[in-house]
Amino acid sequence: MSTIEQAVKRLEELRAAGVDVPWAAAPRADDAATAPTSPAPAPSSVRPLPTAVKAHDAVQDARPQDMGARSRQVQIDLDRLAAQGYIVPHATRSLLVDEFRVIKRPLLGNISGAAANKLDRPNLIMVTSSLPGEGKTFVALNLAMSIAAELNHTVLLVDADPSRSSLLTRLGLPAGQGLIDKLLHPEIDLSDLILATNVPKLALLPVGTPSAQATELFASASMDLLLEEMAHRYRDRVILLDAPPLLPSAEARALSLHAGQILFVVQAGRTHQGTVQQSLAMLQDHPMVYTLLNQSRGPKAGSPYGYYAY
Image (cartoon, rainbow, N blue to C red; front, side, top):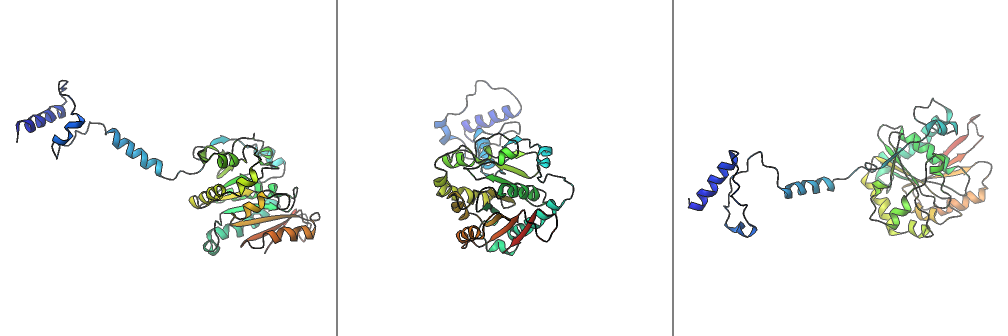
């Protein structure tokens, strides 16, 4: 062993014993080539090297984060919502609660059942109608509340109606950044836009800042990539899109190309048959379309909803 190697070994022994050696300067970067090829192990009290800490942090950052983990918490006034006729957590059993249990079952079945192998993005469900005022937002919100009661699913309710956005207003929440802002500024982290709610397993994504480019944004490759990430990265989460009506807007037709399933709301006694047929013709190539007859006065006396699938 050379004199230099003996000195280095002795220095390490002194440091291991807790002896402060202020005169011993740290090795320079250009001395690295002369360092021993098998240095003595560092004492257990020595803190990890900064590079090791950074590497660990990089591994942590690379792991998928649950959407909403960094979200702003908002409080929905559940008493007010219940008074308006919506489903809320722990509500007493009612006809409306039971009917939405029936409505959600085939949709969820397609996510976890045999259809999941045939459908692209089965957990991405678009709720739409032919015309405004047929109850699509009422249906979307109640469906989200019903799915949030499931044991094996969480739900992200997305306000995707830039022209007649009413979701946050119905929930008593102020407008804020959301979907449109993410499309305009891809560098924004989606988790910073999602709103975590006081309803377990329910999160919200507002429509965001109004933009004259909404139609083009919804039909863009950026929207497709965003929905692809949302649908495939979080397979246990159901993403409900409260979309615009089909006939007066181009956004709904653009969104229909991305959705794995479509729930088409028709208001009984109001929407003309020709209007429904025109809308369904736009969706004829979609593999999974369900219709929901809203405010039906059908065989179930007193039932405000009837559900028909095809």
